[in-house]
Amino acid sequence: MKPRVIIGVVAIIGFTSVLMINLGQSIDSYVDFDEAENRYGNRVYVVGNFVPDMPHGYNTQTRIFSFHMEDEKGNVRRVNYNKPKPSNFDDAERLVVIGKIRNGIFYSDDMLIKCPSKYNDASEFELTAAQ
View: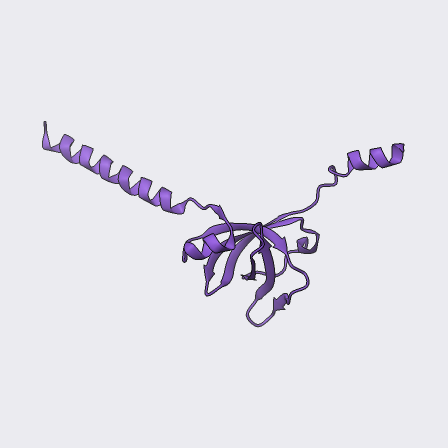
């Protein structure tokens, strides 16, 4: 074989290997807070509910919205969200915080909010109205 062909094949294999390694590291996963601590420093998604009875609020100096969240296994952790409180936060049915955990505090750089659907209650309304 010609040296150019060999160099080309090696370059393609090398590029593909680097691409696959980077892709594998960038795939985020849904975990609970305990698993997030085991993946220290890795970006993860944690699903849970806001705990309104615990301290929460927005600090205008640090520009961090801080609250407590309970994951699906009942673990409660403080979450520091580096943006203002979302307008639909209080209506949230579920939260998905995206970020990393350090020293028992979850540092979130993004948040998904699942709000109750206005269509879910339609069948319940029809049942109670019909009785």
